[in-house]
Amino acid sequence: MRRRSPKFRPEAWLATIALIAICGISLGNVIVRYATDVSFAFTEEFSVFCLVVLTFAGAAVAARHNQHIRIELIEHYLPHWALKVVFVLQWLAGVTVLGIMTWYGSTFALQEYQWESLSPGLGLPNWIYVIWLPILSVAIMIRMTQNLIDRLRGKADPEVVHES
Image (cartoon, rainbow, N blue to C red; front, top):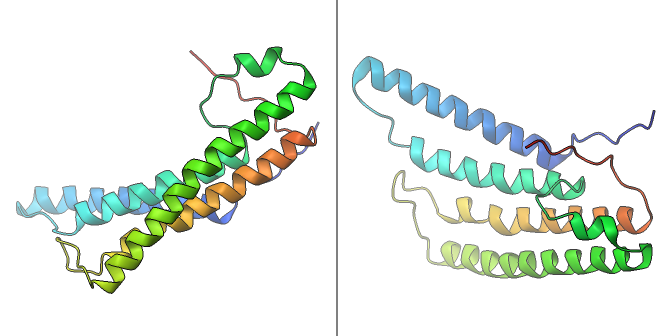
C-alpha cells in the first residue's frame, strides 16, 4: 500500500478555521436572533471574509493534490510526451490567471491601506480583508508548481473517483 503525503498544510488549517468560524458566527447569529429578535451586525462581513479565505485556501489544497475540476478525457489518451506538454500548459494557464490576481489584488490592498478605507459594517480597515487575496493566490501558485513537478516526475496521487 502506497503512503500518501498528509494534507495537513497551513492552507488546510486556514480553511478549517475559516469553516469553523463561519459555522460559529452563523449559529450564534441564529440563536441570538431567535432569542432576542436582534441580529449581530458583524456576521455578514466576517462570514463573507471567511468564505473567501475558505475558498482560496481550499483551492490551494486541491491544487497540490491535483483535485481541481477538469476534463480528463484528453489526458487519458495522450502519449507520455504530449501529456507532459499538457501538464505544463495547464500550469502556465493557472499561473497566468493567478499572477494577474496577485498583481491586481496586491495593488488593491495597497490602495485600501493608503486611502485608509474602512469596511461599511464594522469600520475596520478594508486592507485587512483584501490582503488575503494576493497571499492565497501565491499559495495556490506554489501548490500548483509542486503538483506540476510531481506530475512531470511521474509521481501522482491516486486518481480521485468522481461519482455521478
